[in-house]
Length: 188
Image (cartoon, rainbow, N blue to C red; front, side):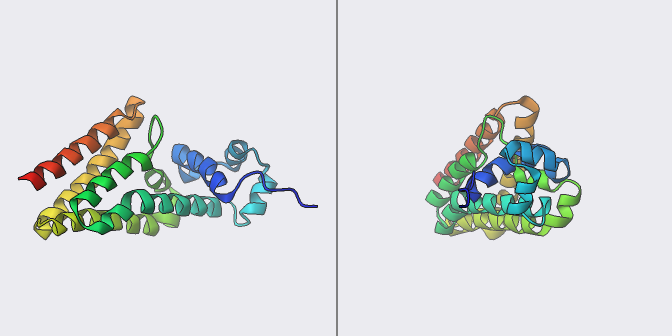
């Protein structure tokens, strides 16, 4: 009789995700990954035969699905409501008391070679979605693209400050400022 799995794939991704967020790809040792999941190294290899790179790819796919649902999906509306919902979703996507960007962490060292193209595509989709919403509300394309690039830069900078300050306040303040930008621009 086979034992039921200790974790679902989603639950395992959540546990592994925190290790990759906090340590990057190279710093996420098999020992640390095993300790975090409560599984042996052999059990991890059973679930992920290709090892750490497969674990990181699984976590990135899981995180990408969350990004799609919370941040990118609402941008499909190409209107103010979608843009504001996406900014609220960004707060949920970067969860925790001290939010950390998985994509940023995975770009350190060898992770850039393994995951850089996928991460770049996700960021480009995010930027395109943000600018598309503004264009849908009547903004000039160049202005919308510049704001979208700036918005992502502000969010990423806020995430760095969250780690420095040990608080999520910089991200919350950033998202509030971006929401104010959108509301002011659309009201004017």
